[in-house]
Image (cartoon, rainbow, N blue to C red):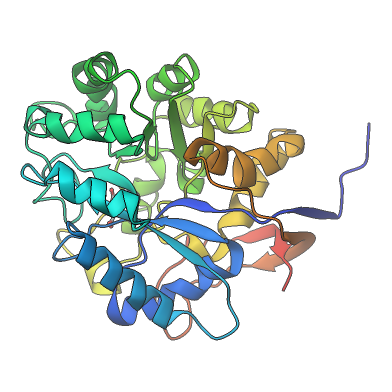
Amino acid sequence: MTPAPDQLVLRRPDDWHVHLRDDVMLEQVLPATARQFARAIVMPNLRPPVTTVDAAIAYRQRIEAALPQGMAFTPLMTAYLTDDISPDELERGHSEGVFTAAKLYPANATTNSAAGVSDLACISAVLERMQAIDMPLLIHGEVTDPDIDIFDREAVFIERHLIPLRRQFPQLRVVFEHITTEQAAQFVADGDPLMAATITPHHLHINRNAMFQGGLRSDFYCLPVAKRERHRLALRQAATSGNPSFFLGTDSAPHPRAGKESSCGCAGIYNAPYALESYLAVFEEEGALQHFEAFASENGPRFYKLPLNEDTITLERTAQLVPAQLEGEGLVPFHASEVLDWRLAG
Ligand code: DOR
Ligand code: ZN
């Protein structure tokens, strides 16, 4: 058996799904993402959502202005699809290099999604155009039907919406975001090369019990909600399998403390500060270190048809205690009060 390495040098990764927020929160959370990742796909679910080219340019400028001096980081912007967004606006944003992709939130599926799409039929001209110009569609894949059990909403989305959508637009590039079920992992693994999925660190580490351990634990509440253990195991298998259709997307989603600790708490786990260490722990536990670089740094850009990053990062085997709360920000990071075996150097 080869001894476990003490250091890993890999091509700098990208985060293919992150919530950077705006204003003070943007300033607080951006350095954690920029320290690890060269690029990130930035979610558009601001208030108001990013639905126009001008709004995306302005948001991109705010992100660039919030970046600490000396940090290199490229935000990749996304358009928030609404029932009446125009195909021309999307195409213009895409061709001008503003919109890397467009995000489909089923209306009311999650945080700031009220203006999302109420019925896929409303955006068929948009999807037609995206397919024609080869613009990726990013999907929050959950039905919003209150009659469907919350733990089944992703699996039902596949049957009701994703399978028909793939049939209707077979050439559309689709990322099934933050998958949480064995059904989704299977669907993507069986799918064609135009279908991919991101997987978060938290869905690889926790199952639904985490939300109820010793009380109601809002820091483990996110959407799609964590599922049963067998789903977590299926996600770990998918992520570490070496299959190029799966890649890194943290879905880091910070909320102010008062938003998490409330009688109607917000969905979202803030995992940005230790994201790489968190993923790496999973790959090591699964005996799949040889697939880590592809998952973190290669599969994503290849799917998005973007160049691979040329610089590298170093991860060292050094134990680090994750703080219970982050100083100044008051945010509780994923893995709070746990010891992680690896540390990102620098
Ligand atoms: O947990 C989540 N938080 N899931 C989402 O889909 C949205 C995100 C947020 O924006 O807070
Ligand atoms: Zn998200």
